Amino acid sequence: MNNRQTDSLNLVERKTSYQQLFEYGIRHKTPFMMAIMSAFIFAFLKFLIPQVSRYAIDVLIPQKQFQLLPLLAVGILCFYVLFGLFNSLRVYLINFFAQKVINSIRTDLYNHIQNLSTGFFVHNRTGNLMSYLVRDVDAVGNLFSSHLAELVIDIASILVLIVYMLTMDWQLAILVIVTWPLIVYIMRLSKNKLEVAYRELETQAAEVSNILQDTISTIQAIKSFGNEKYEIDRFAECSHNYMDSNLRAIRRWSLVSPILNILNNLSSILVLVFGSWEVMLGRLTIGELTTFLMYVNIITKPFERFNGLIDIIQKAMVGAERIFEVLALEPEIKEKEDAINLKLVRGRLKFEGIEFGYEANQTIIHSLNLDIQPGMKVALVGSSGAGKSTIAKLAARFYDPQKGRVLIDDYDLRDISLKSLREHIGIVSQENLLLYGTVRDNIAYGKLDASDEEIEAAAKAAYAHDFIMELPNGYNSIIGERGVKLSGGQKQRIAIARVLLKNPEFVILDEATSALDTESERMIQQSVATMLEKRTSLIIAHRLSTIQNADLIVVLEKGKVVETGTHNDLILAGGRYASFTTVEC
Ligand SMILES: Nc1ncnc2c1ncn2[C@@H]1O[C@H](COP(=O)(O)OP(=O)(O)OP(=O)(O)O)[C@@H](O)[C@H]1O
Ligand SMILES: [Mg+2]
Image 1 (cartoon, rainbow, N blue to C red):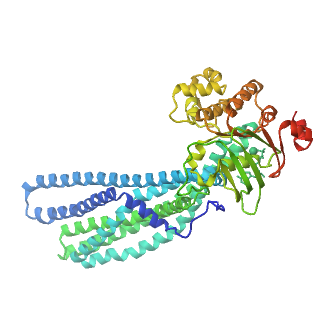
Image 2: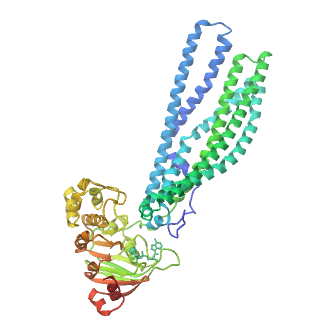
Image 3: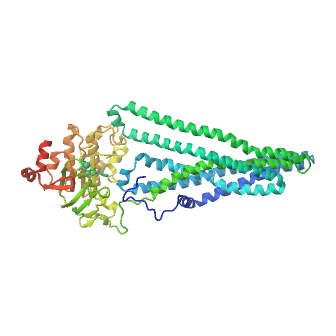
């Protein structure tokens, strides 16, 4: 995780991951308690079944109670039915609990990520965020739905069984216990070997998902360079490494597993041999020996389970660490507790002594002072990297300046609630304009409760209605992740329709330099003009006509204002702007 200057980790008050996981568990204590109860009943039934066998062998058989045999069969059958029933109930309830917990974690995480500032997304790879939300949450979920809850019961039932076995025949019980240190020793040895293999496996898995994420989202670039083969080879190598790590881990596990199995059965063998000896000497009944063997079988199960659990716990804790690290991030842009809900706005936008840099010790915008009166159109002009988009981001409060203030009417942006601020601003930029969904949904994003008539009116005003009607399903046509089926100009007109529907007092237009097809050029010009009408606007456009009509043109160079004036003023002055326009024309 990238540690940013302001989206900072709140280390002081951070609880451990265990504590936080526990708190999530506590939130859903009812299903947890129910799961534990059903698991207890299940364990109790498991304990009873060998007792029935013992009764049959030691009492019914010697007494030749033929008439009780059918009853015995029915009795045992009933036991197994109950056993199965409680087993299903236990499995369902534990998973129900686990799903509740991971649903809470996942929604909290998504909620938190939604509220983090833009800076966070610039600094974190999408692949990583996806892996927090999917892989890590799942890893934590596995822990909750695994045998963790049973571990509590396992420990309790082992204790009960040991006490029972000790009272029944302490010598035999000790034979069982002496094999444990050996099992634990081998388990620890194998755990270390496996851990290395699993860690390697995780790294490779992350790499595969990162490559997938990166290449699928930049498929256009890959194709435009004809680099498909290169990417296929790169992926094939990565996938091969992942396969190798998988196989390595499986090989190690396949070696360890039979050894553990033999060790687990060692106690059974010991009990069988020495138990038979004792039966022959008449110190133990056959029924007691059978019961003993069954209990030994029950007792060794938790060891096998625990072995699997170590791996799940390790993976879950790595996931939990990463999740809670994100949850502990404080949003860079925070709302004040008593933030003002701005209802009516006149439309003045003022930059007052702004100094700003994205990182500490860096200044991108130098002492910016700009007073934009209601309804005024201001164009920002300057070479690439001059800071135009940065000023737009400051106006929408995606970042806060280090010095100075940005004001709407007479309110500092930091005093206004983010929701109300964004309600009054419409932004059109060329990147990531559209969301996956229909054209209608995309326009309605500006006003979620808009009627079909309003949507259509907005589309008409943005000169988008005609081409929308030509799409296969009109307003119901699905546009892809980035609107791949539309031209740049068409996407922009839909984005403008969205802003028109929203009807904000302020408009920010940040166009990319990409050339637009000439067909839509005129349409866009008109559509942009409609959008800017009667609104305070900040325009970063590359179209001379849009800039020319601005009330004020601000020329920037390396984050400093070098010239201001109208088109005519600046042309007459013959400075930077005049040279720009001659180059562009
Ligand atoms: N998120 C960011 N983090 C750090 N630096 C950034 C970030 N975004 C932009 N910059 C830097 O800030 C400077 C100004 O960038 P800005 O995007 O404002 O330029 P611009 O004038 O909009 O350029 P263009 O015309 O190419 O869009 C550039 O040097 C850029 O490298
Ligand atoms: Mg820009």
